[in-house]
Length: 407
Image 1 (cartoon, rainbow, N blue to C red):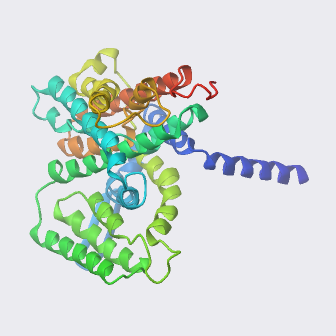
Image 2: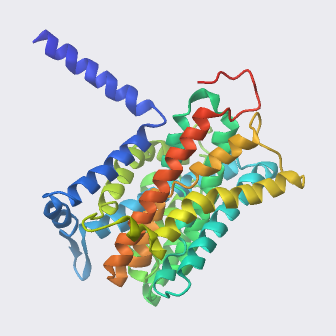
Image 3: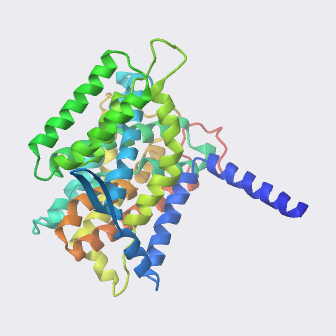
């Protein structure tokens, strides 16, 4: 009996140690995606499909929210993820790595190049298909959790400045994705729902002006905002971004307290270890039955994979390299040109963000070929970016500091 307790304690300690690793969330995301692929391509495919299509309904009087489980995940759980993005963006711009103008230039330009070039590659390969063109933004996304997780696997040889660069670039990338979703992936608008949504946003502003720091007040208004945005035709995840941006960063009555940091700290592990893996599991399942290498050469998967694996690092290096050579920015501290390139390759890991945009672009079309094609392209492009980026960082010294120990 004592041995069982010892083994249980050892296992518990191993779990705790694993969860503290920077790479843990990325590993869990990979596991979730692989599990989805295995289930879809096994006799358990009916379980996977049946689970995601399970109807879930909430009704309060005349208000009815009825969606299959998949859409509750994509519209509901992902709103919490986008709320965390809003919190991180606000903190970084007010107190963090993006609080000074000279810290913004390099990752900001990198993000612009890293979105424009992949989108251009996808557009060029799909210009003849108006329906497929709706997915032009899919390869423009970067999965910050996955990319930072893979970067951490390279160990201490990677200078901290490259991690900061990658995180800052991904934040700008997320801002770009939010703008794209708001402008290009908005359905028919409901006037009354939009009025209610703007009323809730105004309420959040008033709470800020009045220095209200009780989080329950923001949660209640945020839930109403989410329902209003969901019904308005604008994607519901944008409500999460707005709510995150409206959480106060400080408490005038208690200088040691930061409501924003409290919420960010409370959400971080839930998002990293539960919400994103659930989303990955729900959206990464693609049947490989009957597929061939030739199917990967179709314009949609090829455009996405090429955009992520080739377009991302190409765009980032063109814009960042130009800014550095022209004197508008400097290489990250202790980082080499090669280290910057290897890090830009990791930015091609679109995964959850790309899957999310793909769900907006193609799910409503009912075209199975497009839905399967976008997932194939995302998995291939993100996988290649992760493996090649990690190998480059492992095999070559990404730092100009020769004293850094090479593994």
